[in-house]
Image 1 (cartoon, helix red, strand yellow):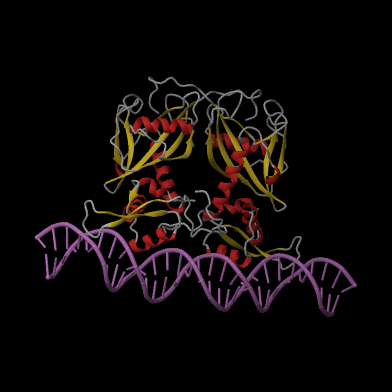
Image 2: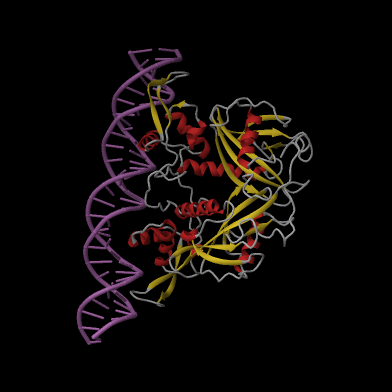
Length: 239
Length: 239
DNA sequence: GCCTTTATGGTCGTAGCGACTATTAGTCGG
DNA sequence: CCGACTAATAGTCGCTACGACCATAAAGGC
């Protein structure tokens, strides 16, 4: 913040990039847009756009999220700043500094190709890529961040509809982490955490039901998960 | 990254801000510079500066760190991106987007007032502030981040000299967290974590010694701490 | 010598979790 | 209606890790 007078400084273009994740049919999906122009014409990229003059990055990210998903109300959606990418050569045309965000959606709507994107689609996380620019790395960072967040926070409910079963909640963990969890143990842990979920009295999910109907829960007031729900140890996870 | 043609975009000034933390005499200290000009003339602020045209934010942060601390070799120092602050009114003069970093230093040198800062000093964390701009918030976020990092990673050694005692390492935790820890339990936990620290054979710290001399350790190769070393529970920590 | 200080070595009880078994309540296919 | 299958729920057992202690060792101060 110092040095206005002694240092020359160059203005930069500032954008936001969004890693919008959701679960579709038990698989992690990411919202991507197809680029219509060079560079990377025809490639898929993360949605995003420039900051407007009076916007913060968070505001811009929420605006872009609304534009790309076509949702009326994005105010309740989980949006979290990931990190900022500023390598000088990350955009071949010009110097662009991009603030990346992760967003979590339940029950994803079909994206309207609104905004400026030629086309917007949900693609399975595993078959997404290679993406334009450094978006492969941003997406990987987002995945890692969400995986870590599931351990310490209650954001898993952000992937679920307003009322959900513990089986659905467990599927969130299993899908993001890519590991299977023991159902009774998961249940015990979640119910033992005050404020993680609260039961919906007298409601049970019967739809599509093979097997015993599951009780319904709503997201609780808690945001942090203490003690954490650690994923099965892979030796030496990144710090 | 889309919309070069359809949207007008405004260039922004991009800076880095550094929350440089260290331990001096058992208290957490932060490196601050005194502003010589308006706005906030005479106030303390976090060191920082503008990105040069061909620099990434990480490169700029390391350069600023070297300038402000006067250290020859900042290559081994722990530097981590915190988050980006982009509120439109955070700088009254102009639109500035700032990428904040945290840096951890062992055995802090006396800062030379080098670079552009009128004066640079170590100030105790608790008596730092109010700072210029939104630096109070950045500093608080940095503190919270470091506190969380101590739980899951081995960065605590970044506060220590190359060779240190377990007592010194414990002091890092106690100072950053503001809580007392049981010494035998801390010792058991650290030594039970492979790669956290490794003993220096046949060396003991005698200097300044009241009491039994302590064995010396070096930082190990591990970066993550599994299972985590949780701080004494305060109910409802932020996610 | 004795007391203080700090490091180090240990015990004991318990909360939490992984692995596993059992029961319940539904659908499906005859 | 009956049995096979499926998924949810309930409970058990054992181990690990940790919190709260107590004990001993090795230094300095007096």
